[in-house]
Image (tube, rainbow, N blue to C red):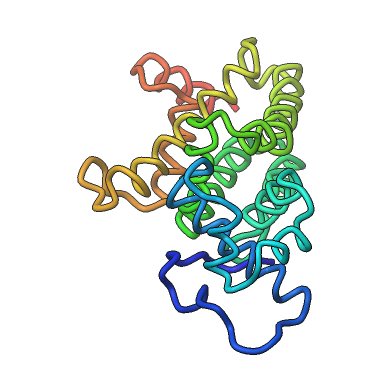
Length: 233
């Protein structure tokens, strides 16, 4: 749906000669707004600056986005589809869930999330700004995406606990631990340590190791217990 966003100085954001079709103008204003917000924050960006960067009047911005809430909702939709496709956890893990393949579920989700963040690190900056500035976008992201991920994975984990495949522990704690590993790795790679000095591994390797830690732990007793379980099965 959307394209990778470039910096606000990129020529693609320069005022375009001639008249644009409505949808094309809508997308251009949205791309400009996203780029400015992710580089300057929400408090540091005005609709006037968005209009100037897009080469349109401020009235034109409000013609396409009547309210700020409408603009923020469009940003979430835009970023959710960035990088060539939407990030839909239920669809990504569907086959593994049907097979009751716990490793397949978590490894596929981890890899998809890491690749998605690599293609669009700008989204992470947007979320950090929105959280630090207590911006509405942060709450919208929580309601529209994060809560749904917790509900989706929580339901799967509870089912696997009923199957006797996983220990009895609050599924929200498991989901928090899993997301924590994936998100911290992405934030390090994309924002704090782009040269990967702390940890230089592929997304495939990271997804595999994070899943290992989640499902098997790191103690030798845990490793021996899992080895016996695989042997008995």
